[in-house]
Image 1: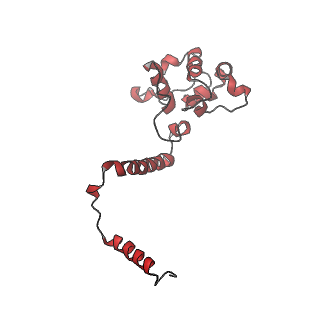
Image 2: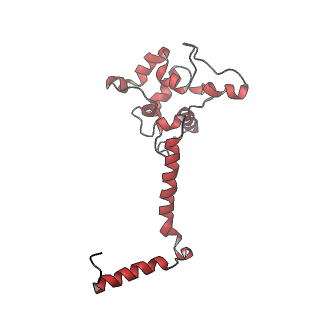
Image 3: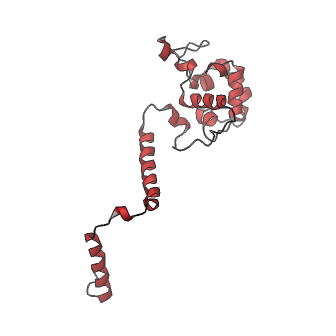
Length: 173
């Protein structure tokens, strides 16, 4: 390169190339020095796996990994219900897997029963939805599970619980 023959640069090049030849004893590196870097690397790989997972109901509600900030309910019952709603597995929608029965259908429209169907799709619950999720309707925001069950929902969880109570399903989940 253009700096060849310049005494200071030659010495720097020599020192830099000799660093490649030295062995580094990683046992002498303090744990705290590489812990954060290793943690970020693991989290990045985990996030990549999460992003590439197919047929993952929870990904629509929580696209980024990490602790649920909302997992701080005073009553365990509501935290359990919220977790079941988020993963889409409840006694009502998946109890048939343990009992060997057929998958449940909505009693109102004979479509497969799911959390998505209950919270968003079933026309029988439209009026109740409008009552409890009125902010979304007033602002013309389409219903989405993330807006109801995500970490920063537009609708308070208490409204979701009240909706489920009004339609008689809260204690069946």
